[in-house]
Length: 111
Length: 209
Image 1 (tube, one colour):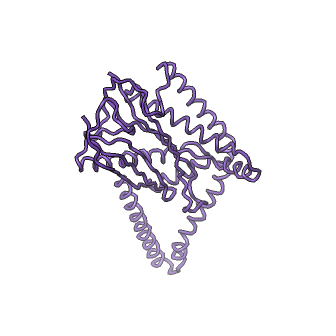
Image 2 (spheres, rainbow over the protein chains, first blue to last red):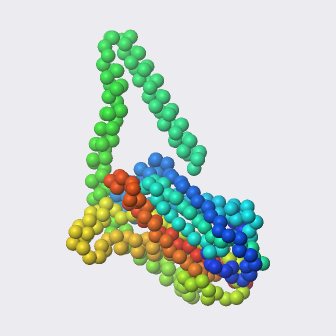
Image 3 (cartoon, rainbow over the protein chains, first blue to last red):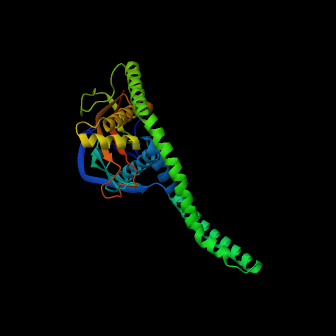
């Protein structure tokens, strides 16, 4: 089972296990800022009184991270790469309801 | 996501319009009735009455939820931690070894496919924990309640990463990194915001031939 996003191989190691990198093509990145709707914010606020996992925000960040990775992959496709290595993630919360997710890595060609 | 936001906006505008039409109708009917301006006053006061009702309900519900949190939150956190540890042990027995590694290497040479695996979770202390933490802060030393919440969350997220790797069919996950991000920024109004910590674990899954 090969996890390939739109034909691009995404790993967070410096090399691709079992493959040889032939060309490094520079940094690619993708970012997104997303927010939940007011109803889910209110529900998360109520859940916060009791404590525990805030499922709404877990979902929110999961979706946004997938979107950020998708944009990074689109960036890599646009410069003609076949894989993205050494992927890193950065998260920052702008307000308590919205989060900025940023994914970046090095676009390469491999054999 | 976009459609829900549009729907919500549409709902807001529609409800305001419906309220206006309804109030104008009520005012018109009362004018034809006995000619007094009493319902118009009610119409103007209605938003404030609703706000006061919301405040009253909040004043009843909040202490109940706070007490419920005080009774159950510590137990819930411990249960979550124990549950994560139990699932971790059962997976380790099934696989015969720990499948997560933080080193970039150590894999066998016959890797057939690789890919990114990630898992996350947002965990927050209850308001009871916040109060205990505030009291702990006055004395100093280790703030155990927050440490318990965060380490339970981390154990849960690590276990989610293992489950995810197993479900997607990876034999091993290398170069695992764990990020912890604050969901409560310094810039926001700290009174009304949700207190939470996001724990995010990611790594490279490897499948062997």
